[in-house]
Amino acid sequence: MATSQEAGRQEVSFTIQTIECVACTPVFKRKLGKVSGVLEVKELSMTNKVVVDYDSNQLDRDTLVQEVKRISIGAGFGDKIIVHR
Image (cartoon, rainbow, N blue to C red; front, side, top):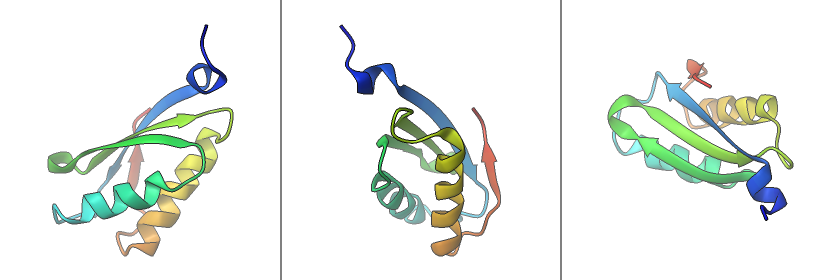
């Protein structure tokens, strides 16, 4: 039987176009991992892509997208973000 967290588990990926250094992606990943409802953040540093698993029972997709933008702007990366799914 699936737990409510497993049942609500969703995945979305983002490309942060303005991240230019390999050291920046882990900083972004750490900040995003602190958002309530985010279950896991996987980074693909060579492509500036971040894959986020989240609990849709706690966090909706639109709010997650806004949090990604907020963190990106706050970290100095800007808001040039592509949402893939």
